[in-house]
Length: 145
Length: 254
Image (cartoon, rainbow over all chains, first blue to last red):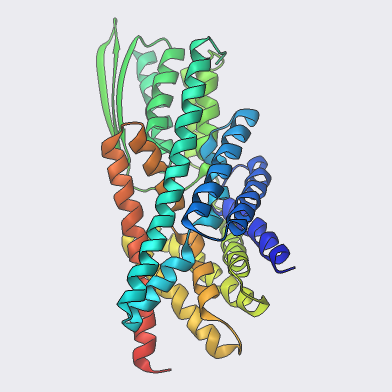
């Protein structure tokens, strides 16, 4: 029940965020659905650093596939889809601990936030490099423009 | 000569729009190269940075033409990048002349009017939804909704008056926190954590970060490094805004 509400909220958050960055209309729905899929994986794997990596990997692959299907740039889909994973809670909590003077907690929360961001970056890099390599091979065979 | 100048104008404008809308630098470079191939320019060299663009066209009849374009204001607008992409594809396939492309690009560059209320609504709804996603209730949703609306109402006028991006991140962080803390006073049972962390989600530099990574792994180290710095600094300033307001609130002792 709780998950249902959170995932629905995740969908609306992703779609309205993609409206905010002025994504083209017909890419918003795809972005929202990919975001929900990614966030589900993230919750299932228990919000660890590995969960960030796995969820972003799923999002990256789905976005690249969508981009190929709809003949658009993958960035259009990734921007909206990745945003629910961005560790905003971690950032806020780190700041709260700093303000409270609890530096032990601040450093450990901050470190796990940064690790999460690195995991996201690594996963996006992996998918983007893999798909670019695939695309380059296809272009050599003489794809139409 | 006339024709090559139109070509130069068109390719400059196309990559300028991409850079101003938050596109990757390699996309701006690829667009120039693709359009030049379609328009029959034999040799083109282009270097795009997040803050500017240099390009040189070489043809037999008119020699070497170089232009530098400075990019001052950057805002995220994916639809414009998409439109530029499709125009450059058409030009590359020979389906559009330089003159037509220039006209279309000028239309994109000067959009009719910004749908301000739509953006405020989008920001409010996304802030509210993020709060619920992070475990907030309906009261938290309402407070966060107003945080998102306020931030989106305040930031564009600041950008228009050329307030630096870092300062506006600081202001956004502080405003969000102030609104959330006021919300806890006004409405009983509002939790601060999901409200603030939800409301800052749309402000975090998501696109800048992914672009920075893409630029870096493609070997565009200068733009990649600059973008990483932009993303890190704006996240740090946002965090500083939150911290500032939290400690001031604590100092007042409410």
